[in-house]
Amino acid sequence: MPREMPNLALSFANSVDGAVELVKGVESARSKLGSEDSRQCLPVPRIELTYELSFLRIFNAWEDFLEQGLLRYMCGYEARHGQEDPIDGVFCKSLRSAKVKLNSGQQYLLWHNPGKVVRRAAMHLRNSRHEVVITSMQGRIENFAAIRHRIAHAHAREEFDRASMALAGKRYLGSRPGKFLRDWAPHTNVPSRWLEVVSIELKGLAFQIVPK
Image (cartoon, rainbow, N blue to C red):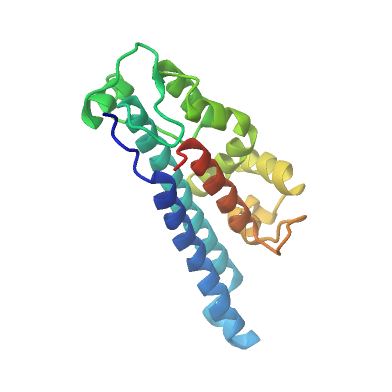
């Protein structure tokens, strides 16, 4: 009997919500301070750094979610839509054996690049949720990955600038991801900062990839 897929999407969503609550708490604390106190205790650059750290936590959780979901699909775990279809017709017997097969001799794999994730999934599963869902939003996820890359690597300015232009229609002073993530996103039903918008989109994708 197939093993039931754990609610990986919900676990991911909880991690995301925790990271978003961190910056909301900082914003709330700053709003309660006087203007002089806020400039001294919580200057804007420090708040923007909090947004960047929160986003890194969110994107790390996203990468882990993608890996854990794919490993379990390779083992025949059953989600709401059923089991996935292995290319070679055989499910792995354990998560350990699935990881060995997935890594193909490499010590570890990176999961930030959606194109690579799609190709990786296609090597082992036929028309998988990973492949279909990520392909449908690949350009958007690539922009999110560019934000992550700019936070982690100071040199990745051009990639981030292209992403901010695609998402927000503008560049940000110093190519700082924190400025973008703290900025208010246009055309939202409820006033939302970009960190929240990205978080909501990633959570939505997660529940499509591993429906429960």
